[in-house]
Image 1 (cartoon, rainbow, N blue to C red):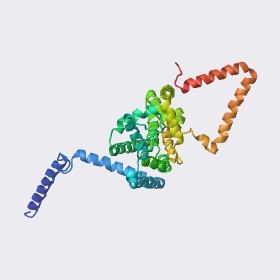
Image 2 (cartoon, one colour; image 1 turned 180 degrees about the horizontal axis):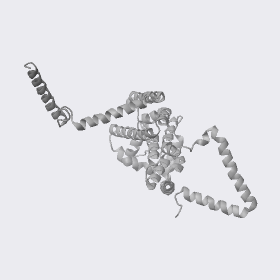
Image 3 (cartoon, rainbow, N blue to C red; image 1 turned 90 degrees about the vertical axis):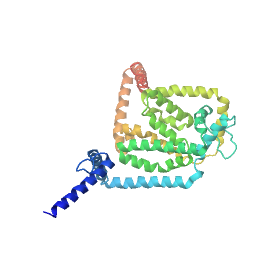
Image 4 (cartoon, rainbow, N blue to C red; image 1 turned 90 degrees about the horizontal axis):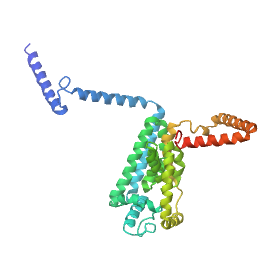
Length: 341
């Protein structure tokens, strides 16, 4: 009995000491006087999340894709670090153009170690606020904002289709690295088109118009906008044509520089495929015509529709023409979000 009492007293004092330490660290004595209840609950959440991720990684395909995505990202990062100050040639051209334009210079024929600005003149004011920053700060902001936006889009896509997103990221790794290296505006425009599919119709149409005015390739992405977004895209594009007409002399200079400037093979243009991700994920059957197994069914459906129209034409050519005009007008209104107006 005499030996047990001192030992119990020692254990009690140790437990009280640990409780005081726990209270200072965690803010409350908690369960058993060691760790607080909220801390235990958070630990349980983390433990379950880790178990879930480990369970997902049991799929061999997922393990391989995670390894390949990490390897591709590592190569991109290594390349960007290796380039160092040599990177950002295209972004530097936009930065210098804003400064030259404000200072009364000619951004299409710059002096010094800058490439010429080759985009429409009335878009120059967009680059001016950013060009007021020192180059090191401006370049960090340009590349950092692009990377953050790219990671957000990749996170959105990965949550919905992990395997497809991983494969697509691997295929686009080199074009993405090329754009991040030079600071070309292709990748920011692809991200604008990606975000336009989540914006309201006015903003979606505006983003599409900006991307199309700077690079004509985004024009083909007009059908993936929402119906009203397509309508507003037309409205904004008409405004862009008017602004181009008002700045026609400078636009002619821009076109002369654009077509006279030597350019390598534009592998970096493939990043625009990333802008198709939200639309493709929302319409999984949109590319079924690319699958040879679907071609017979598509051919039968198309043949049946054509047979109906031929029969209609034989019976009443006049009514067929009016019906075709009515159906076409209805589909155009629906395509532009004008149905019911």
